[in-house]
Structures are given as structure tokens and as C-alpha cells.
Length: 250
Image (cartoon, rainbow, N blue to C red; front, side, top):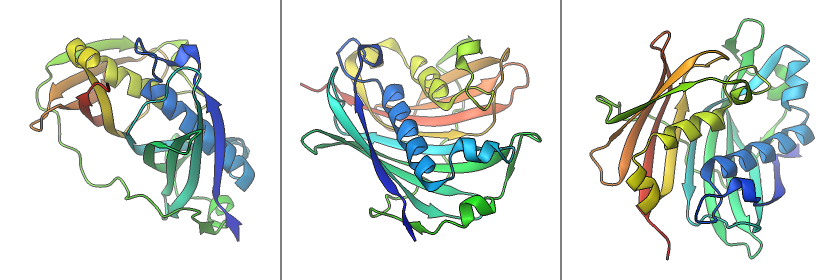
């Protein structure tokens, strides 16, 4: 029996902040990914372990809730643990704390395994299922159910996939999709409000040379936006998301 939780330490760098001096959400999600990677290394199920069997981890869904954004040079601890497992899903949770143990944010995520040769999802291999998942924390509520569909875009961006958008799996890294979704939000929202929650579903991969259309429109609920990222070449939906915003911190 192995405890599946661990903590990783980070310091918010100048390249990871917005004009307010606060860490951006893509930067914080990158911390979560790094903490998850370090945790899977200790469990013997890291991406490198899977790549030896021509498989890899892919993120299928994530919900992030932020209570306060850390500032430049602030030290944070990202705690993560495997919170559950199904036939093809691994659930992983996160909490972000500052040095005073103030809870800054939390997230739930769902991970799948992809066959790198066939580029198809597969059941969790024995390498993973042989590990008994013993959550070190109470699991956060899973992100599940359908998100509202964006019907008519208020605004669209056309984004060519460049070399530095591609990750170890040779497709667009998921934090880039998150960044593109947020970039499509109206400027007055970005300037006058702050993102408090995002839920994002990754439906298909995009490769070098593709062009991604990032579309956004207001939802029925106030200060809420619906997002859809799709392939210009195929029309296939790549990402669906919903963002919720609040007034700026004083």
C-alpha cells in the first residue's frame, strides 16, 4: 500500500505574472502539472514510465477554483494526490497553499492513457492498476456531466499551432488551450474582472501546422462565458470550457 499524495514547492516568477503582479492561471495549472509529474515519478507511473510501453498520460478534464492569486516572488506549495481510479480514468486532485497555509486554490482532474502509436485511448495498463490508490486527502467532488454548448460566438480568434505550442506527446499542450480560451474573452472582462473558476474538457488533439479557432460567448449566468476551441481544417471540436469571473481584489 502506497500513499499517493505529495507536495511540490514553487516560487512565482516574473515571467508568470500579469500586469497586476499576480500569477496567471495557465502558470498555476503548469505548477499543478509539474507537481503531478513529480508525484507519478515516486509512484513509478510517470509519463517516461508509460513511454517505455508506447503509452502516455493525457488530461481529459479539469476544474480549477481560485480563491486568491499568489503574487510575484510568493512561495506556494502544490499538494496533489490520486483520488480515485476507474477502468480508463485516473482522478487527481490539487490544492495550492501559500507559506502561511492559506488555501489559494484547488482543482480536480481526470486523466486517460493514450497509445502513442495508434493515437487512441486505452484502458489503464497493469503498471497503473497494480497500485492501490490510497488518497492522502478527502477527494474533491469530481468534475462530471455536460457543459453548456456555445451556440453563437461573440468573438473568435484564429491561432496557428506553432513549434513551441507542442509538448512531449507531440500535440498542443493543454495549458496552451487554456491560454487561448482566456485570450478570447473580451478585453474589458480581462481588465476589470478576475477569473474565479474554470472547467475545461479536452476532446481531441491538435498538431503542429493546424489552425485553432477559439470562440467565446456569454452564458446565461452573469459573469460567465462559454468557450469552444475547434480545428479550422476539420471543424472538429478540440476543447470545451466554461469560465466564471468576479470583481478585482482590493
